[in-house]
Length: 80
Image (cartoon, rainbow, N blue to C red; front, side, top):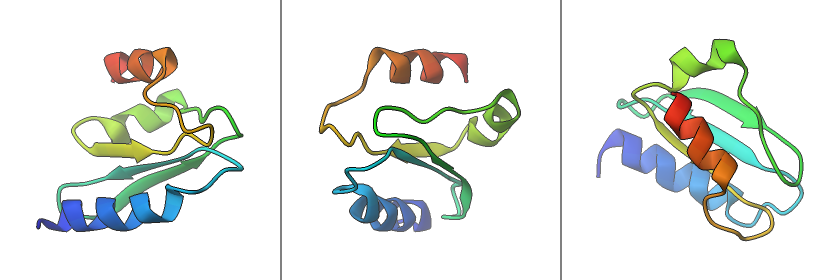
């Protein structure tokens, strides 16, 4: 398992059952956490200045309602 995969496994275990807010992690190839964004119960927002930190990295986040990728998730990924 790579360092990035190890970090993703750790943070996903942390947020899997988080039901009060969305939390996003951006993880670099070496396993470093580059950015953490907390949102509310239905979304988390990236600012324009965050986008360069996201490009080329792994991004993971939870959905407190248990849903899968939302249309907003897809839109965000298409802009980065």
